[in-house]
Length: 195
Image 1 (cartoon, one colour):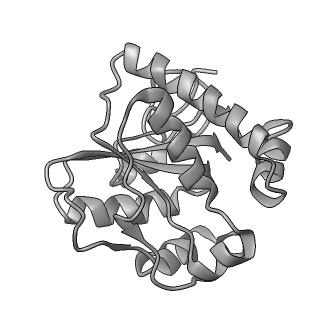
Image 2 (cartoon, rainbow, N blue to C red; image 1 turned 45 degrees about the vertical axis):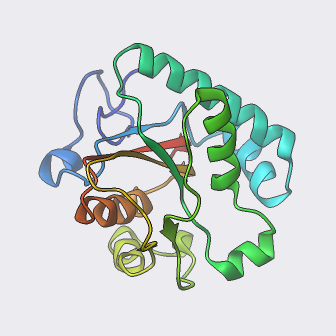
């Protein structure tokens, strides 16, 4: 539905509004594009893609996200200069064997004809599992979790951060703050679903 916060995409009672949280503390990202709410059946599809390595499901979701973004671009959403997947900590990457955000970024890059940079965003240390933390702890946990590659050229650029699900927005916020501090002109977040 179109009844989402025009910044963070949280569901609202009416369209064209900004939610109270974004009004009170505007996030470092400009806007979130997420075609779905994280609920049945989308949640189970994402879980199977992410935890059971069901690539075709991920690919299908990526295609649909790409259609959603093409529509948004046609309606005036500015196209970013680069797509940056959210990095996984190395331990998590070893356990899972792949980074679902990186796969999504690759599929989006191909279908939207946008370049992607997989190594600009880095996750030097393992942080506690985000799902066990409240919002304030998530942000604290994440503030030191991400780093920027010395070769990353983000100054003046419009960047889109790619992730699978946006929960509290803490990951997107931590990364957007990092990118804005490094001189990025604009940061958006593209993901499959929003809780």
